[in-house]
Amino acid sequence: MRLLLYAVLILIAYYVGRNLLKSPGKRAANPPAEKQGAVINEMVKCPVCGTYVPQSQAIVRRLGRQAYACCSEECAASLRA
Image (cartoon, rainbow, N blue to C red):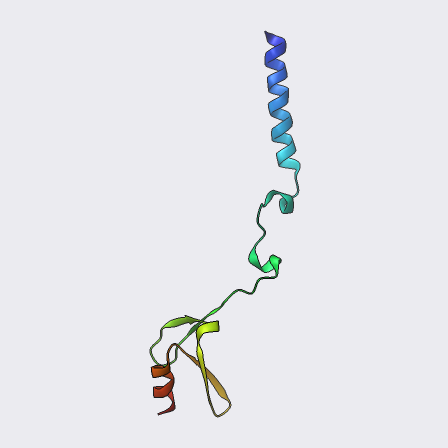
C-alpha cells in the first residue's frame, strides 16, 4: 500500500514540477493580439459631443492643419460651422 501511495505522490510532483518549469510563452494558449499581428482598434473622442468611437469608424474632418475624428456626420457638420 505504501508503494502505491509513494508512486502517486511522485506522479503528482512530476506533473506539478513540469508545469512550473515551462516557459511563460508556452503556457499561454492564445498570445495577446499585439503579438499575433492584429491591429487593435483604438477609441477616439469626438470633439463636439464627447462620445468615444472606434478609430476605424470615425469621420475625419480637417480644419486647417488639424484633423478631428467625429462620431457622426452631424457632429462633423457642426464642427465646420
